[in-house]
Amino acid sequence: MTSQPVAAREHVRQEMVADPRVVAAIVSAVHEQVPVYAALDDSRLPEVRAIAAWGLERLLHLWVTDGALEPSDLRRLRGIAAARAADGRPVQAVLRAYRVAATVLTDEIAARAPRLAAADAFALTRMLLTALDTLSEEMTTAYAATDEDLAADRDRALRLLLDDLIAGRHASVGALSDRSARLGVQLPDPYCLLVAEPVGVERPDMALDAATGLLEALAVPGDEVVSSATVRGSRAVLLLPGAAAARAGAVLGARSWRGCAITGESLDRVAVAHRLAADALDTAPAHAHRPGRVLTDADAHVLALLGGHPAAAPDQVARLVLGPLTDPGQRHLMEALTAYIDAGSASAAARVLHLHAQSLRYRLRRIHALTSRDPRDPWQRLTLDIARTIRP
Image (tube, rainbow, N blue to C red; front, top):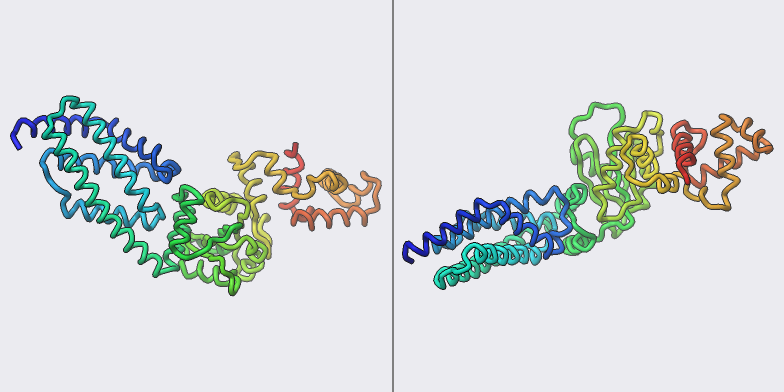
């Protein structure tokens, strides 16, 4: 290769590396053309940009020098593939992202050197084909090896999966299903995400053993649906079948723990469920916690509303709290609830409604049965009051 084509390539290389719009164009193309990347949350995009910038610099260097990928490059590619296996991004999508990036690279070079010499164009084509072939082989092998290791250590694999769900790293239910299938597990759907912590103790980081012990206490023997546990600081986070929410209060109460169980979010919104539960535990007053009972979706949404960070519209919050009481056929119960809250006692409410006090107390028991909220409990009465106030 003569010095003239080297100088021409080097000029293009320097111009492209110095222009941040090139990396932005690569990331944008990958985001638009590869569905898995299109649904990545903002926390993952800096990593995509960093890999794009590194790949751009390395490929342009190989083009200028007629070089080949070095052992350090291959180690990095294998590390990237292992990370994608751990977070469940399909290897086919990862390799497609590199092909899309190579196309953008070619277009950017063509835009800067429209009269590229034939030797430079042939060198670019040869370099890209060789590099894509090498990285495909290296990354596919590393991805498969990591995938097998994760599948062999099932508990660790499930914990990593839950960690990724909490962090919002799964782009779609489809990607989540693919990862679950590779692990040979069926995730609970509907599910209960339980966030729990000991009562009245200092808040050091929780040991994983404590979380797995809680998981074992809540697991149903013979259940084919998988459950998993991880920790976040001083709290255990458990992904359980939806039915486990009914047992959570008793199990936590026996251990002097408290918690919040979210059951109303879809599997692709586990991160939302975790944020709701964690914020609820951070902000709930002491009297909101009762032995044998955990906070629920309704409590969490009311607390978010009170904190000025509503995760749902007011009418949805009202429906979560009031449940069947919003049905027209239960109007007499809504009237009893309103009278009880406004009057302050069952006897006074009965007089307002021209009912016998026992009839009013019966209606309060029906409200408790239908909503799982006792109007006589201060915290639960507050949630009921808020819900009937904001109800359209």
